[in-house]
Every structure is written in C-alpha cells, then in structure tokens.
Length: 320
View 1 (cartoon, one colour):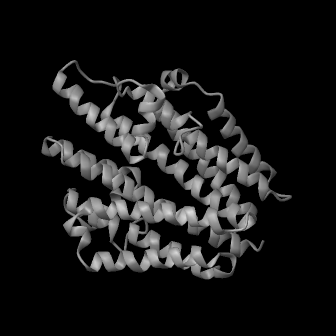
View 2: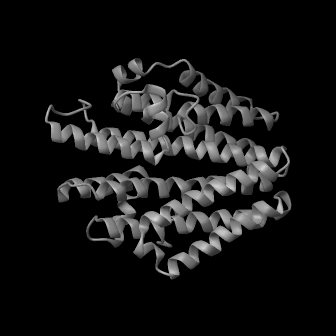
View 3: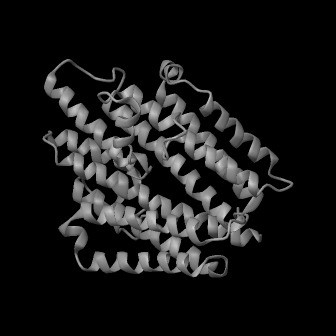
C-alpha cells in the first residue's frame, strides 16, 4: 500500500475516534456539573477537561475564565482548536475524501454525512438546547462509522491501518482520562474522608468516569460490588475484555501491526509488543504501589513512541 494512502486511512480513524472521545469527556463533565457542588469544584472539573487534552494554554488565549459554556464551545465548535469535535470530523472527512478509492461507498457516505449533519445541528442550535443530546449523537455516529467499516470493507491493509489508528488513539485517551481524573478525585488517599456525603458524591463521580468509557455496566458485571477506585483503575488498564482498556487497545494495535509488518517495522513491533506484555502480566497492586500517575505518564510516552514508529515505518514522512 502507498504510504500516502496508509497515512490518510490512519488519520481518518484517529480523528473519528478523537471526536468520540472528546464527546465522551464533555458529556461526563457536563453530567457531573449538574450534581450539587461548589463553584470551585465545578471549575476544577472543566480545567481537568482542558488538561486531559493539553489545551489549557490555547483556551486561555481566547477566554478570560474557565466555565462550562466556554469550555464546551471551545471543545465542540471552535475552528481554531484543532482538537475540537468540529475540526476532528472535518479532518476525518477530508482524509476519507482523499482515499475514496480505498473505502467502500458505505464508509465514505457515513463519514461525509456525519460531517454535513454535524454542521446542520450546530447551525440549528441543537448544541445550545441540549448539549448532552449532541454528545450522544457524536458517539453514535462514531459507533456507526466503525460498524460500517468492519462490516463492509475487505479485510486487507486498508482496514488494518484504520484499526491501528482507532486503537492507538483510544489507548492515549483512556490513559489521559484516568490520569487526570484520578489525580483530581483521588489524590493520595482514594476516598478522602469518612463523611457520608463525601462518599456519596465520590460514588457519582466514579460512576460518571465509568460511564464516559461505557464501563459502568461492565464494572457491575465483573466486580459485583460498590465502585472502588482501585477496581476502576484495574478495569481501565489491565482487563483485556474491557473494550476501552489500555490492555485491549494494545492487543488490537499489536495484532494489526503484525498484519501490515514490513522490513523496517521490526523495532516498532517490538516496542508495541513489549508494552502489550507489560499490560498482560501487570498487577494493579504493583502499579498503585509505584504510583498510578507515574505509570500512566510512562505509558503515554511509550504509546506516543509507538505512534512515531508507525509514522516512520508506514506513513508519509513529516517535513522537518
């Protein structure tokens, strides 16, 4: 496959996944902001949203204060924010348009319609009327895009590069979400105090985090008890049967990398495989003992290194 084609397919899937992940994070923050809480706590939640995406500085250039409407507008429709849902869906559509010959008609039409319909919804004021409904719509369109891709495309290199992009982006996002939310809610002592009201509020916050990765029902099925932060961490890092866990994502990345391997990709495959093995044989008590933040920071560095390796081995070289 031409590196130019692989590049467009890889980034098409990454941008679609990024749009969904942004919608998920915005939705959980929006739902959490409706809970009884002080103004400082609410603001901290939205600052955490910007921190996850490393956009605090860019946001501050155009906004005097951090609040729900400002952050949501910035992350949904701001054309200057390259990580906004608007820009992600636009980039996904443009990458798909560049390689229409490598996609089925259904995949192209789904991606194109998502972009057109999203703009119609923004202009029609749907976002202002019901932000939660728009976030659900973005998630649904991403699910539809993945389903159409797997259900209609030939299982060849085009599909493999789409899958690599999807799961590499998902791994990065899950790690960022875990890191920021655990630092904000847990600190050094997971449940900060014995106060019943605090514990109830913590329950709603942890529940919201699980819902943001479609993990609430899965947690109940796997652990069958109250939500314990240590178990949330285990579910989202080491459980290979949890679709958005770090382990599940790296399993998919490695499997699809093996299918597109070439003469120069051995080192990238080795690094991805080693990261996969660390997750497969890791234990949550060991991770927590050494520090979850340090572990996730290292994971992000390593997954970004794998992404850079994929760029070197398969995709269009980036001009210096």
